[in-house]
Length: 599
Image (cartoon, rainbow, N blue to C red):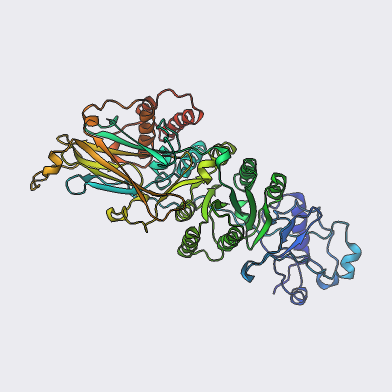
């Protein structure tokens, strides 16, 4: 290996000290002999005086080239970005691939000449090279906008409910940062379901939710109507909550170092700790290059918050290892008849270890059948893997939320804790059969990634979405009344209208299937939608108008060509004056999007 010239080394050090050298790439001034006599050191972890466990990857320089003492070193640089993964990690029985090692590096010999000339701060760690994150690496799994269906040919529409709200918070994040969201990041149903509506409460818990239907004229198309289907689950008073066995699975890898990731995650979960009941317990598992448990199950809020406060970010991301360990701990502390849930907080960047999505999903589905569910909380920008976050939450019978602020954390994990954690109905499916004598064409706004086959509705082996305590679900169809001009021209060789359709006074027939939280067999709810609603439909009002405004905004962001140019003024007018903070914020976001589009 070629040696650096001593003069050049001195110049580089001087430039570094003066601050005029911006970038130095990758090489220490050392002789061939010193390189060959000192084997490479692997990354190790050591405990500092504060008790934190800090991963280091630097090399301490020693022997001077050709026996000449090096010039006095410059003042030490600012402390390098530490890679501490967790503090106070406790030894657990984990597979060798995820064992946590906390060894201390052996002392390295220092040449006598260098030792004689050394200054008090002559030994310092060279910070590891930090590779910049490409802000364009965010991953989304968008679907094409739902197509139009002819009621005669395809009268039945079937889909799973969706109570996730992550797409709305993520869309808000883009807009507040002065950027339109990618179309694939916008899911209409999650924007609609972010807000609460005035649906009737269930009379009792025998049927866990109510079903509301109503019809209104479409604000963006005079030829069509909107059919809204709303579900509302029963509320669960604090005293009635079942005990919860919660495992916080936290990503402390290097990608989580920014303020909108690990620091915000710690704030969010500290708030959740304050909502715990006397029978609830929390365990904390962390993962980066390895995985470990930093807090055994406890109800002590002070211990939970102290453990969270000690977390630091650094290293790569072995998410699968951490998830396996979290499931092991959840099983060890399983509560019969209670809530057993893992809450994973991450940017979704599972880039080391068993990162095969199919393998992860299979593991999550196995544990779901054993009664352990999974909620995902997404954080951050740049390398955010939203496709992974939503998918694993769906397969884990949990829900997915994106946390872009402390306010959102308080909303999801404080105000809506019951909805987030306590399931009142699982595998909830909706099936709508349209009467072709009343409706010629229809399309569902959103729920593209929740579509089911018609035969899946009665099949109890087919998984679907869950509803938590107090949850609401809204679905909106845009329909073409029979005889009105639709998106698809009439066909020349259509069969005569079936007699059953002509003789019915129904617009549509709505069916819902669900299972109780501990049930294996589904129950059925049926509700006809009278055709009189179609005849008497006026402009949407109140909550319906606001829901339609949110749907219109979402479809516009997705580039829906059937919105007929319905823009900002129409959306804001439809939303109306609002007193609720979150609804007021929505109206402001509509204006932001308009300015970004050049409106």
